Length: 336
Image (cartoon, rainbow, N blue to C red; front, side):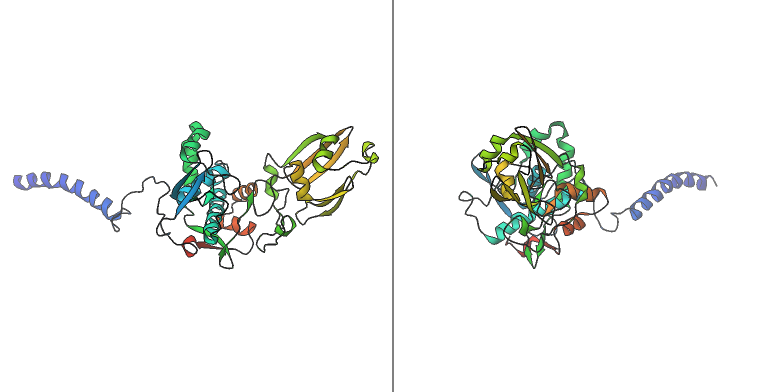
């Protein structure tokens, strides 16, 4: 009897340890797959599902050198530079897809005569603004860690995805803030593009650039436009005329000082935020109030953020601003 008691006291502790350990093993998520626990990751050189990495050759304007980097590293730098990191994750993901589409379309077409030899894309607004890791650290300071991780997550979760229409990468244009509507491409540019159509974007009213007023003297206005205002202008009469409005509720044509300008021409000559504007003459000063910030064609960044806040995902966002598009892997269009 004593022998059995002794054996029981030896076996019992072993069972108390072994049984729970077995349960933990067999019911753990990694038991059947042989996997490991999740770890923090950054943008991979070879994103899952995209195959080999695509090198991108970026001309660094300030350094005057060409830097070669993996596609997804480049996209992270563009998203960081082009959209506030504070924006909703789904908006950042939409921006990542637009940025990736831009460079893939450019490489697919092979028209690189606007960059120095050996480069494929500039790091400026002429193409897409790009910030490397050191620039992000400098700009964001003590907010670098969370902002950078947010950008990397958006890029990682859309890795390899580009926007296409009719089986080709689209011209994924974007801008900051609309006046409440995006613009038909053919009413701002000469070419009408089927997927760049005017759609409502009421979320943009939250943007700090939604409405702004600039002031200039009549002399400045006359010099910039190359016109001479009539006597009626000095008495606040009918000194200008909006001849046409666009589908996106911007100025299509305006007559002033005996000349006619497109809304785009007027905006560019006076360096205005947008071609959605009104004019007021008080004394010798002209007050120009604009709505929106940017050309208005394609995806509104503040609109994308507003859609994301309302519960829309990145795919829904890009398919709203770019009508009739599809999502595909970039490897269909460029060799890697």
